Amino acid sequence: MEENDNSPLSREDKILSELKQLKMLFTVLLGTEDLPVKEKFSRAAITKAASEFKKMQAERGEWVENSEVSTIIKHAPYYPAKILIEEFKFKNYFKRGSTYYLKRRDLIDLNKELKKRNINLETYSNLLQDREKFQKYIDNISQPERSKKRRRFTIPEGLENIFSRPYSPPNEELVRNEIKTLWEEYEKYNLSEYVDLYYKNTYAVFKYIYHWDKYLDPRTKKQSKQWCEKFKYANEALKRILEHKKKKILGKNDL
Image (cartoon, rainbow, N blue to C red; front, top):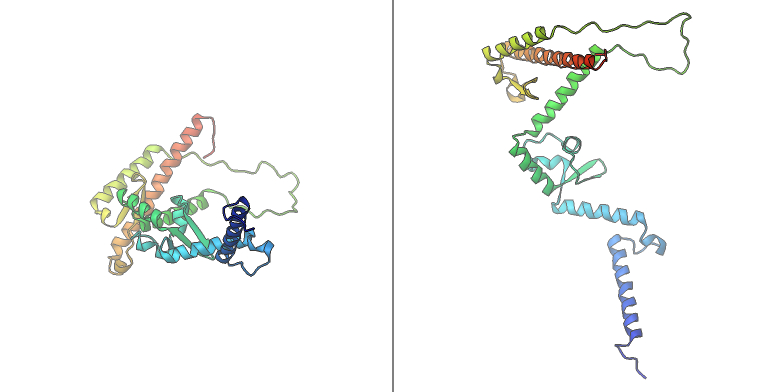
């Protein structure tokens, strides 16, 4: 007696056969068809396959290599993944070896927002580097040098109460007058031609242009750089004076 093709048993065998075929196809996709049964669908195998798939997507253009971001964001610095991830919280990326890959569509959308806000990514990157350098300088001159900690030490007998309190901050009006004078110099010598201002006009950066720097008048260059340092220093001083006044109101005396 022949078995009916539509019988429950026949349909079940057919489904099982198709499932086996699907599993076999998955092992081919994962590249694990030659591995033992227990390793065919292991986490390592799936992770490797996912990595290969992302690589394939990158090759198809869905992901952009770190060094190629400037093809989408015109004024991007070299290898901008770090600033995009840290400063702009860029989420859709992956790392293969030492190379970052970023989602093309998200880069395009980010580029639109940067244009809308008139942000040059390379200039912003340089600004962050300058701020970090300046902050290290300020921290270095405002804090005492600390010796390295040692596990074993001996404090001389009777040694105590050795410390120094910072002197009172300068008169606020004095600092504001210096900033006012610097603004007058800025206008008088047309320093806007050589200086960029950021953070609500409280931070100045000299406009360095590699291809033209050699031909810039040395006196103008020196004057502009010195003005930037004085301007940053004065604004940092004013900022700390205002912070000190606020802390004093709250009952704290530290600068």
